[in-house]
Image (cartoon, each protein chain N blue to C red):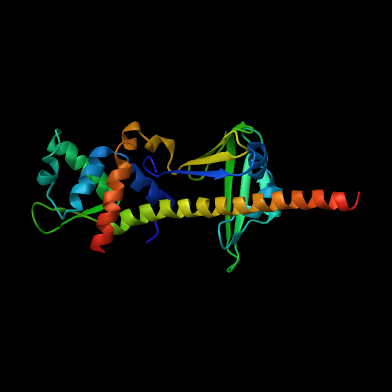
Length: 122
Length: 144
């Protein structure tokens, strides 16, 4: 799954809040109702509902349609797409720096060879 | 990773920092390493206008498919040979490179990339994200 830049912004923005991360972490244990999710927090159910809406808009969670309690569940693909994106950035820089190391080696060897040639052909 | 969508990579090179700074700011050096594995960055597609507000643009080309990946940044900080930063206006992504002289001819290069616009990088987001995300990833690996 690949997310657009706008989707990534929404996903990272949603995850930039500790309460919402705690909600996501809770949901890794299985689906839960808003009341269950609100329990550990010292904030109103209303405030928790707002956090849940943000997570839902970002696609990180979905809510059941049929039961009255509309339990929340995690959408792992969206979370994975966000972490994959970071992993991709890390890979680009890791490989780039590997090649920079090779390039520096080449420069060093070239200088060494130049000096040797200078000695041979003064 | 220290915060949401943020990346820190450090690497020690056996080279003086003046040379490392040249490598990341001169097209004739950049063309040798800018593309990751499987990608090239032709020197004619590298623009370096080394001043604050100047453009840093590259086009990486996939060696197999020929597909092009342009990227355009604007320098926000230039302090040779210690620090270099640019922002990509399209994504709001900022990359800061810090060059630390280790005193024995080696240099530590620290790449710090914020992947989301700064408005999302709240102080609260810095705490705990790493561990919770690690946990989530471990869990996702278990359930899928």
